[in-house]
Amino acid sequence: MLIKSETDFKDFEMQNLPDLNKDEFLIPFKIVYWGPGESGKTTNFLRLKEKFDRIKMTPGYSIETTDGRTLWQDSVFLSFECELEDNREKVARKYRIIVQIVTCTGQERFLSTREYVIDGADGIVFVGDSDPEKIEENKRSFRELSSFTDKNNIPITVQLNKRDIKNAISLKVFKKYLSLPRSDKNPDGSPVVYESVAIKGENVVQVFEDLIEKMLYRYFIG
Amino acid sequence: MTLLNSIPKILYKNKISEILSEMRLQYGVLSRHGYIYGLIAVDQDAKIIAIDTRFDKSLNYWDLASIGAALYGVAKQGQDFFETEELERGALIYKDMQLFVKSITQVTLREKGERDILIVVLADKNVNIGLIILQMNKFAKNIKSLIEESKDIRSTLKMNEQELKVHIKELKKQLFSDKLGMIS
Image (tube, rainbow over all chains, first blue to last red; front, side, top):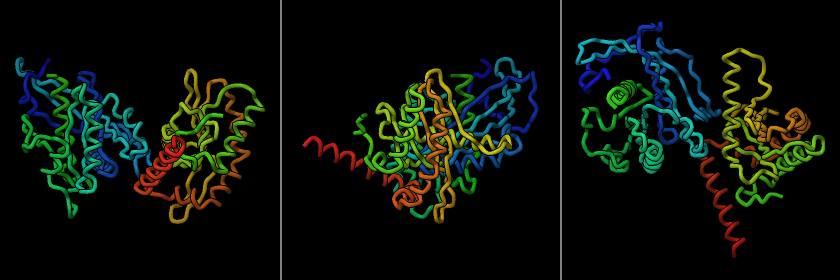
């Protein structure tokens, strides 16, 4: 193990380095965007694709209906380089992180396909919907997600999307429905829930980076 | 005959179901080889139009529809990536089964544009898919005209996800009340 504590991630940095270097350590990650239908999973995906356009390893694809709803999944591979320091030896090592970003369908009629999309996930972003009428769907979707992830302790970052709608539910109500901690922050200092407006790109990258940090922590420390 | 007591009647008691059953029958007469688990007509969004009347009861028709439409979606995406000619059909071959999906025609829906109509077939490995494709080609025109004539089917195909969700709930309710009727 190279990393001993969470603080080792302070220097964590993403850079655009397109060529694979044989001296680097390779870490493959799969991130799944999960949530009820029309909560903004694909919007997150599209914003990330735009943001990290220069480091895309593949053009990405979307298997969707004619109305633009995800039928199977959206997928793209990104390549990041990060430098992590071994606290004991005081040596920095380069890591190449290949991240596959996948969104699963939110439509209930394709429910059975989601199990296969989430298979092999290293981290999950739960995208909740701020629409008060979607509160039960948020709850059902989060419960379904928990049934897949509870056993293997996969890191989950919770994002409450569409904060710009007029009658958006309060953060307090959302947390209560999902049985999330009342506090604002997790013990590691990250927000319990990220408020976002994915369509404008607000907090999309922050959520993604937060999850990468959690996944790296789990990868090295367990 | 397989009992379809877990499937809404509207999906297997229509003229397109009869055509799918006829395709299965004619395949049997011509080949007398292999077993077809199910034939299903869907649009490219996995909205089910009809299933054949001998659809195997161990199969989930929603799963077959969504896998079939997803396979078609992947195949179409590949078509763009590889800049190939028109897609003929998608296939998944397992050790003991084969799944085929083919677009047999396109229908134009007002305000929604063109929609591919797919036939999805799940069969064992002994089925001669070429013969089934022949049947598909033979009946494609009939299926197209039946869809164009049917207001119900066209309105289902035009539904958005929210409307479809309500529609599916209604179908499930009908199924449940039918079963209650059988008990009483």
